[in-house]
Structure formats: C-alpha cells, structure tokens
Length: 311
Image 1 (spheres, one colour):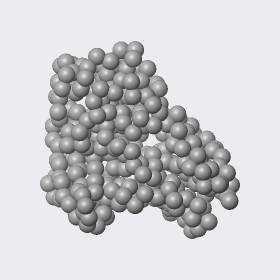
Image 2: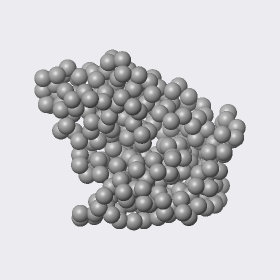
Image 3: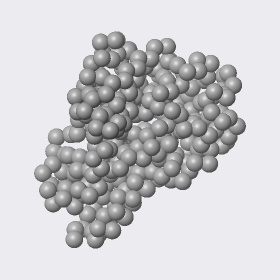
Image 4: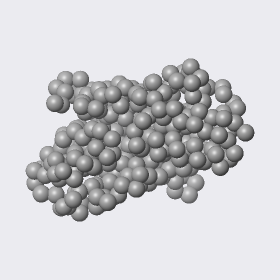
C-alpha cells in the first residue's frame, strides 16, 4: 500500500474535498496526508474574480508542489482547473459528480422570482451575474468574494438580500440552511465541471495513477469532458460568462450552453446532442461562435481589463 501526499487549497471547502479523497484512499488501505498550499486566487480576496483574469489562479502553486514532488496528487474543484491541463500533468480521475446546479440563498425570499426590484444580490461569477440580470434586469448584482462561511455571514448580516453559490459545495459542507431554491439549468446554466472533483498528478506517474483509478467515474469524465471541450473551444476560463451543462441521455450526451453579456442584455443559448463528448462540445462552441459569441467574449475580456477594482 502507498503513502500518498495530497495538495489542497486551505479553504473550508477545499479541505473537505481533500479529506474526502483521503478517506476514500484510506479505505483502499493507503495512508494519506494533506499539505495546504496557498494559491494566487486565495491571496486576492478584495477584487472580483473576473477582474483578476489569471488562468490557473487556483491551481498554479499546487502544480508547482506537484512538479517539485512535495505532493503526489492534487484535489481541485474541476471548474477551477484550466481546460488545458499544464504540460507535465494529467487528470488521473474525475470523481462522481454532485448536483452541478446553482443555489439561491436568502433569509427573506424563497426564490429569484420573489426578489423585490432593487434587491441586492451577491455573486462572484460573471456567468451567474449575466444570467440573473437577463432574468431580472431590476436587481442590483454585486461582487461577493471570500470562503463559504464569509459569504454566508454577509448574507446573514443583511449586506445582501440574496446570494448565489454552487449548490454542491454547500451540500458537502452541510451549510444549506439558507438555500431556498435550486435554480434549474435552463434558467442558470452551471459552470463547466461544476460539482465534480479533478484529481491531478504528474504526467507519467503510473504508480499513483493506478492507486487513483477507482476514483474515476466514467459518466462524470464524459459529461465534464464535453463541457470543458466547449469552454476550451470558446477560449474561456472559469471567470467568463460561459455556462455548460452536459447530461447522459441513454447512449447520448445532451449539452446545453450559454454565452452572455455581463449585464444580461444578450444571452446566446445552444442545445445539441451527440455520442462523442469532445466533438459535441466543439460543435456547440462553433454554433455559438457563428451566432456572435466571439464578439461577446471579446467585449467581456475588455470589460474585465478596464473595469476599476472593487473597493
């Protein structure tokens, strides 16, 4: 049996994920220890994610630890992992996926439809902001950073009337008290890979790959691979207003995707089915580009670069 060192961010959710994988490895007879690694994304907490714009902002330092053989594997939220895994690394496993939908949290309102005009809603994501404002132009949407506990405290203190977070993380941490609505994917398309964990190792490390093989879920690898192929073909990262949600339909995949302007003034949606994950993702991306997604994304990158940092 192996002694495996796991690299993880230090947030409450990241440590839950790392400890979850460690427990599964121990059940297989391995020993596992966790090394906390602080990433660029963890250090920048007072600026909206879209204005940072660094690919790999939640993974770079962890990959450095992998390369230096300080850790044997890294546990990531798959949605934070760039679609092109850096040279020298590989995805050894994608775990069984938790429900990828976004959750609406509030103390006083039971759903998006109940919010009063001018209600203050917090989210860290341009993707969520764009789809929310397309649905409700009359809401005030503001950046929301920090770990899950910090975001929940801001809601509880009345700083926001509602916040929107990934439901998977809340369920993993048992922090669902303020969840009033799980938002349907046709209203708010999730981020590519949301709800799944990606286990990264050094390329060619066959020994570690073999130990992790049992963690790989074929359905999750297929659906998230489809979503990530779309994201890659659009040239997007996790901080742009692109949504992608693939699901199994018998022997086929059904992919729904969204590209939107941050203010919600233009939302492009595309839905297609196919039997090859990567090919389907690329074809849906091409369909969105043909309808003007490239112009939206060019404008978005300019928006992210030129918008003043939040105080």
